[in-house]
Length: 375
Image (cartoon, rainbow, N blue to C red; front, side):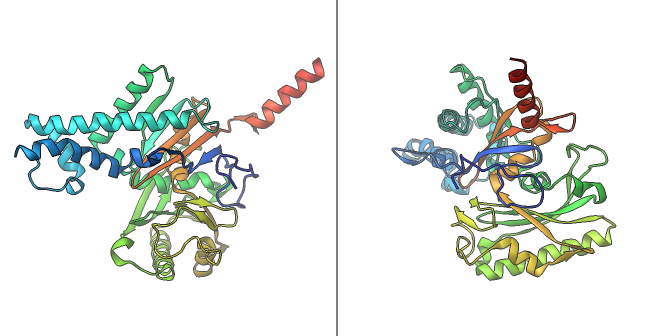
């Protein structure tokens, strides 16, 4: 199924990677646009920024005036770069700002290309997430990109994702679940799978305080850096199951009313049956095999939560990170997310506003019918 022609399914616990979710329609995700140099996303990734930084250091290194010394550009921490932005070393400051400017130009180019696709037409706001956003230099690059686009008459807002990028992928899974889950439960289990790490968390819904889930928060989480251990696929599933069981025990001990639901954010194109069509090449083992199904494997290990059968829904990680912003995007109709990490995740959404208990589609169809009847 093409990711920019998603089939809109009914809401409820049914299909993984669905085009229709309780609060939004997912218009597209994981679009892979190419130009003459290769995949477009490679021009606006964490690696791309490091390559730009290295390019600015090169002439200084030749003259022996590189303010960063011998440290490799990919090894310099975001914390160090952020400190330079408020420090007194003007040469280092100039190098970092030059890299930010060049990266912003690249991100603006990539964003332009997305906005020109059919799936991203009429986008009003773009949320930028991913690990790169979690830094002062990332925030400056995002702000500079917005200015570049507005100077070219693109009517678009670019904003950093509100939740910490490590937590946005967990909080976003709440928006995969149907609302009835929240009426009798105050928390869910969430999983955010990446090419380097797997993070599991207990997410408190905050539903009694805010029905739009704007008060949701990660109560506790556990991180496993699987890239260091290089496990088999089966070994990864076993470790993930153990992590989730530990969180179930912790939730029961702390008195949470845990829903029998696990939301999963995973790289790649997710099929309705929970298999992964493509894009999971950085995960341990072959996750794209027709013989492998992560949700089914987890249900086998955790058939019940409390007294109820376990239900699992999985979606693309860029989609899920974007979903954490749903409560704060209600003043626009169409919005997107770009996640800057190892690659460039992307998703575009259309809000499904409620009007007297009906979603926007049914309301608009009703208006059209009334108009045609009148005519």
